[in-house]
Figure 1 (cartoon, rainbow, N blue to C red):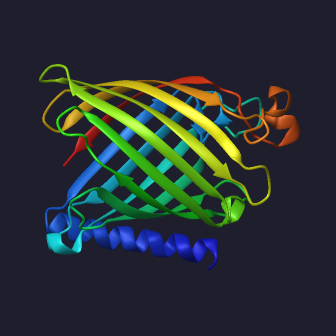
Figure 2: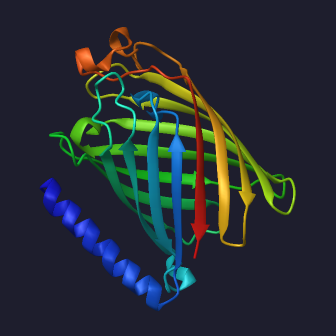
Length: 260
């Protein structure tokens, strides 16, 4: 299916879902984050300032025995040009996704389809499906999870990206919530070397301004586990090679979130 056709269909689905959500009082959430870099699965796609907005609609009036559905979108807007490798003040990526959470009580089990599009580039869209399983450990705040991603099209086609994680959340006060987590990923690359790809660690704080609005901040560390699987950015200059790689181990985010 052509990228334009798929994008139009996804946008139509989200428009219909939004209309249905408003009528049926679905849950709508939105985020607006500034980040000091854009790092995706260990790859630095911009080592400068970026703006990353997102929106999600969930809580549709579906009987609980059939599970639940959420649809959303997320985008990256480049403010920095990454040594000339990016065009400033343009959206370099807009993603669309739909998640189905299965009606399973023992664990949290969900399946997600995501389409990654690049509106100001000649690159074709990347498409993948993911299966995620997780389970909260009592009232400890700990949440182990495992997500398996499989590429359907584009540069990720036939690739497996398998990520295990452990997150911890604790409410420090009525308004402040602490969140931390670590994740380790293994890549099965149909066109390259397989192996452990990256590991990430995150610590974040959320401050509730009101019942619906919050300020969020995080500090993130990205480790390169195997330079033959996750290669370095050539000479640290993606503009001269056209190749992106591991370049930015530490970055921070600051933004707002709201729920309607």
